[in-house]
Length: 349
Image 1 (cartoon, rainbow, N blue to C red):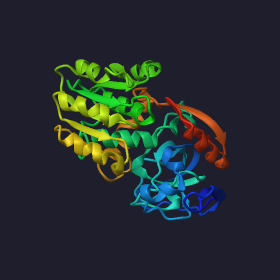
Image 2 (cartoon, helix red, strand yellow):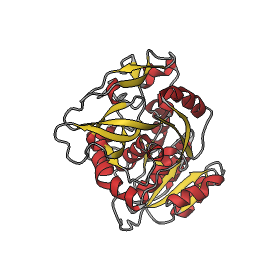
Image 3 (tube, rainbow, N blue to C red):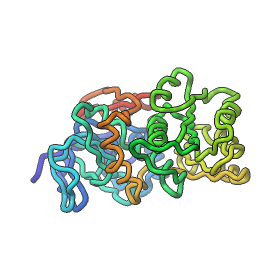
Image 4 (cartoon, rainbow, N blue to C red):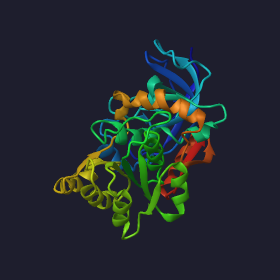
């Protein structure tokens, strides 16, 4: 089986993207090929040229980038039984990950190779552009919350029992935060989250018990009061300045004293050293590691399909379609650099 393929190529760091032919790559064992119908854009997709080497030093050029995929399965590799051609799916594409590092596995093309255990069927009622907002943010949140080298929380599931513990999500209205709130709730934890006040209703709709203004000078005191005597199971810190505000909370609340930071390791090293002086452990998340351990299949295969179908899990933040076709992706990345709040920019293919 073969299909004519087209990709959005990045010839070298900092060069303009170019739409051009790409080979159709058949799936190996444990892989599927997806006809991509919608992609979402993320900051890492549009890095300035000088940042590619520090952020992705292993990336081979010319490259195809992009992580967020929604579409239909067209071919399955040996050993794949959970998915079949024609299934509507979302999936995390790992073409820029160190251990994969090949254009065939990135999102910005018509036919992408994906790891079967990092793909989830989506309900017929869920439009594919909405499904495309999830993968990278979902993976990043799940990595921070559930991997043993980060917060090591209990995995999500249907009808979770109340665990009597709290999880703090600093930056709850971000793409990663919107998923973290839902994952933690579906794992049985009470969730406190921060955002700007105009996103409080959004956080509560996702399952946060309380929302606190991240810009308030009393945010730390408010969070400690809300946590009370209940153990703080862990904190997910998202965005600039998040460690400065979350370390005092983790240091003073009863509980694990663990913070998973969705910031590059270079930006968490110094705050992490300061945190250790206060008995707080900070780890830096790379949103692709869950593909190599039990968390990836637990989320994408065991939890997400049924949760989407039942409505227990929502595609959040909201999808905003900003163009059609691969040539529209660079415009979407330029729009993303202007800043977005509680939404994700999507391009349909």
